[in-house]
Amino acid sequence: MSLMFYSPIDDPDPWREALGAALPDLEFRVWPDDGPLDNVRYTLVWKPPIGWHRQFPDLRAILSLGAGVDAIVADPDLPPEVPIARLRDAGMAQQMAEYALYGALHFHRRMDEYARQQGGSVWQPLAPKLIGERGVGVMGLGVLGSAAAAMLARTGFKVAGWSRTRHQLDGIACWSGFEDLERFLAGSEILINFLPLTPDTLGILDAATLVLLPRGACIVNSARGAHVVEADLLAALDNGQIRGAMLDVFAEEPLPALHPLWRHPGVIVTPHVAAVTIASEAAGQVIDNLRRLRRGEAPVGVVDRAAGY
Ligand code: NDP
Ligand code: OXD
Image (cartoon, rainbow, N blue to C red; front, side):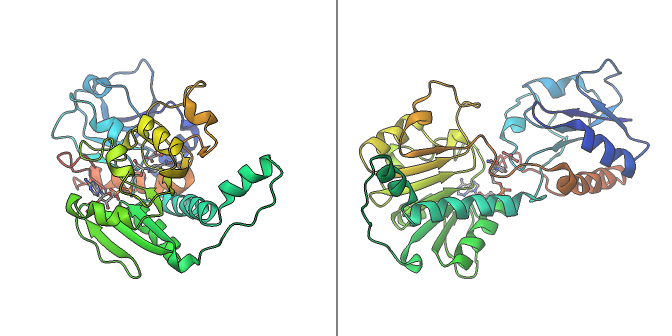
C-alpha cells in the first residue's frame, strides 16, 4: 500500500521522514516513479495536473498540501466517492494573520504614500487617522480569515467580516451573503481577501465591486489571483478608486515578467508566500488523517465538493 506525493514546489524529504516515522508500513513514493499504480491508496498533492488522479484505480483519499483546493477540485475526472481533505491552519493561520496585519498597517499608516514621496524627496506630513476609525474588511471568515480578523481587531482596527453563512465573532461586525456585500464593501477602507476560489467567488473583485469600496481604498489579496479581475484593478488604481494593493497571488503564477502589476507604483508584489505549508507544522495533521482513513473513519477537513471548498 502506498502514498504518492506530487508537488512542483514542496520538498518531499521532510514529508517522507515524518510519514515514514509515524506510518512505517505505508510506502512513501514521489511522482514520477515506475512503481505499480494499483497499490496507490492515497495522494498528497499540490496543484496536480488535470486528469492525474485518474491513473490510480484504487484511490481511497486525496490529501491536499494546501488550505485551498481549487486546483484539485478543478479536475472533472476525480472519482466522486474519494474524499479530498485539505489542511486546516497547520501553521498557516499565524502566517496569514501576520501578512494581513502588515498590509493593513502599511496602508493605514500611509507608508505607500510616504514611499512615493521619498522617491521625489518630498517632505510632506499626511493627515493621520485613528486606528479605531479605520475600517478593515475581511472577506472569508474561515480558518485563516477569522484568525486574521481577530489579530486585526486586537490591534485596534474597526473590523468587519463577510462570509457565506453568518458568523458571530467578538469585536467583529459580521456580514454574510451577496445581499450584504454592498454594505460590507462600503465600510472597507482596507479590504483583505481570504476567500476560497469557487465558481461563486471567481472574479469577485471586479470593476462592479471595486467601485463599491470607499474612494481611495486599499486591497490585500492573499487568497487566489483569479478572485481579482486584474485589468479592472489596474484601471481602478489608475483612476484613484483604489489607492494601493498588496498582492500575493495572481491569475498566472509566477507573475509574467512583463505584467503591468510588477511595475505599477501602487502595487506591492509577493510571490505566493502569505502562508506557506511547513512540513514540520503540517505533517501531524496529514498523519492523523491517514490513521483515520486506515481505521475506516472519515478524514478531518473534508472538502464539500458541491460548495467547492
Ligand atoms: P475556509 O474554507 O476555512 O474559509 C473560507 C471562508 O470563505 C469561509 O468563511 C466561507 O464562508 C467563505 N466563503 C466561501 N464561499 C463564499 C461565498 N460565495 N461568499 C462569501 N463567503 C464565502 O478556508 P481557509 O480560511 O482555510 O483558506 C482560505 C483561502 O486562503 C484558501 O482557499 C486559499 O485559496 C487561500 N490561501 C492562500 C495562501 C497564500 O499563501 N496566499 C495560503 C493558504 C490559503 P462560510 O464560513 O460561511 O463557509
Ligand atoms: C494554500 C496556499 O492554499 O498555499 O495552502 O495557497
